[in-house]
Image (spheres, rainbow, N blue to C red):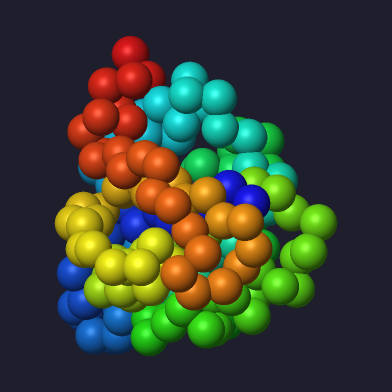
Length: 161
């Protein structure tokens, strides 16, 4: 399985427009534009995910929709992908899609760094907003993966040009 972990794009701060809540924070105009460019870069790299999974938080859903539109795959919201995700919860989600060979998961920090570390037996990476990590998994379980690529958002955007 090819598993791609994507951090959501640049989002508005919690404030009066969100009722000081984290969940309804939307992507900013800059965040949407950058994610469209990053998604075009993913397409140029040849990514074609069979399944796009996303946290239910607004900024992740919007990010997954932008990427899904560019790559021809609508997102599936999964409550277990909200902040606080750990490797066991992600593995449970992946096991519910046994035929999927290429999966994109849109999530949050610090969860993505910790999950990636657990999947590839250690190591930490910076997940800026819009970063993409690609992991090859023989099977969905901890310490079974190999990190094959880590794309900063600026690189994905440059590839779109």
